[in-house]
Image (cartoon, rainbow, N blue to C red; front, side):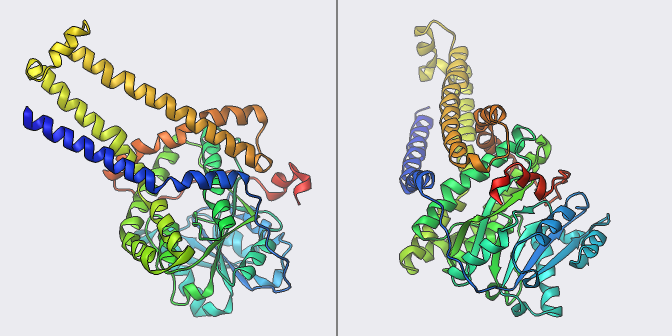
Length: 455
């Protein structure tokens, strides 16, 4: 028992020390959150330079929504002759390809179910463009998902940022087109708005790289002259970390607004979140050493960007799940068994008797109810406050009635709290990319009509 107690104390002290170091290393994120709440949006200067863009769409059985996306592209205020829309119909079993061709897109069909996910579809699409057009034909490649919608001035604003940053990667403002569907889609919506406040806006204001989040970004052609080589479960994170490690700048353009459809079903949400965790873990493990090297070799803001992206990609959900769930449960289980077998020998029985209860009951009530519930309540209210600040700052962008928005903001902490259990599940799952069904038949006109003064 003495050896067990010694090991237990050492392990507890190690975890506490590691957590303290981790908190110190990431305290700057709290400062950035305040900056994101208070900083005005960055406005890029007008320009007469009109870049030539290829718009890339990866689609799998997206007949319900892809037409609306293409219509919103055709409705752009940007020069139509500077936009070419490419679609890869990836393992489609519906008429997605036909819809896109009828709307004037260049369509490539791909059938490879062994490599059926977005990263491989993009690799295929870049290869086809190189063969038929040449990568250098276009100045930049703008990536969208089939369920997206573009504000009419999206490309106009993106071009300004692209020119002003000397053809850097530029990320647009991600909004949610089905925010008010239910608390799940609203949770996603607040999560991505929080990314604007916590990551994109403050990093843009301070002048160093932000991150890419799946869709709504432009890649300068020089970065894909040799093709696309990011094919893991989260190709966006993989590309982000690799680019920052290489010293690339990733800018944020707040006026380049686009809309994304979010999951609204529990099973779909769980599957996607586990895929995110697994993909981000792979991306981190394969690029962390390059980010660490960049911290010490890049210099200036590029070094800090490497530091920042290291902790952005650090598997927080896995770490916190192990720290807050797995380790306490394992420790409680061991002590529970000890109490059953040799409780008197380790002093459990005496402590329980002093409290007027039997050893097992006292330990179970204290460890399994009191402490976790207290932590849960504290974390819940902290996240409610943070979510409320984000909602207040971004309120004009949110398409949702005030009563529902108040309710969804109070429920928002579930989005983070569920991350821990899902992270643990992802470690033991064989997560594969599966298409998410998109069925929200919403046009850009329907969204902008709700805020007629925004166009």
